[in-house]
View 1 (cartoon, rainbow, N blue to C red):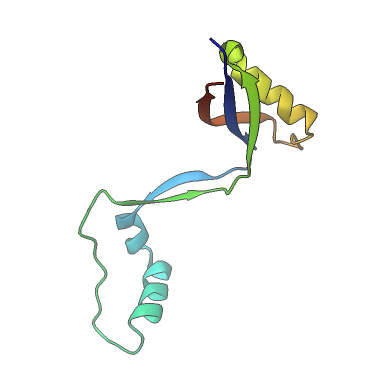
View 2: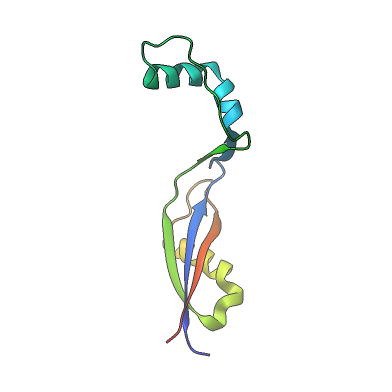
Length: 110
């Protein structure tokens, strides 16, 4: 079967941040509460912060550039290796940045 695959990937580093913080934990932090109150309830007294959804969370992660690579459909099994080779060729690997995360794989039929 003819066609190509567009591979989208990111470069991962050891210092990258990828953390979920529950809204309950966030609202229980005194500094966060003061900042929210001073921004959204300036000059008001007896204000309480609460959440409707106890399971709600905030995701904190490092912003990453997305890179693309086009390969043949026959190379599907080697996509990760080819993405790593592409990153090496483009000199995207830096100090403590030596891993690749596949973001999307899109098939193009020719």
